[in-house]
Image 1 (cartoon, rainbow, N blue to C red):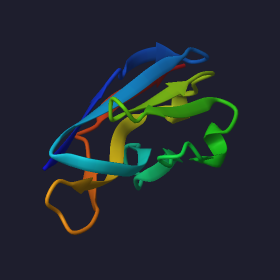
Image 2: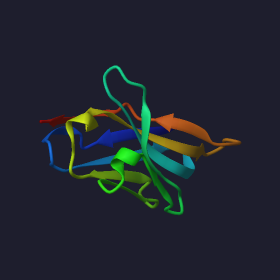
Image 3: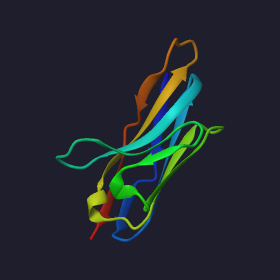
Image 4: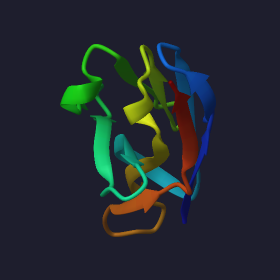
Length: 121
């Protein structure tokens, strides 16, 4: 009912910057909180940052001061700008959204398929 498609991953050198975007589409009535998660090889998926519909944000400690999450409610899109990237930021980054689809009684959590970010040292 709601699809999330990430874009913007790739290979970057340590210290570099990269921007990710995630567009939601489908039978969308309302999108509440949107977020970025990541999963490194052999590790559990972790929250990187989230943003409420009103623009309140929350970041993982390791991303504070380096990552910026933003969203465009009119475009149903969330962004993640990453700077001063480190090799330990290497992971698959997943978009996440808490959304209400048209005709639904409540919200559900949706995930994108992920985009790989590789930071070389």
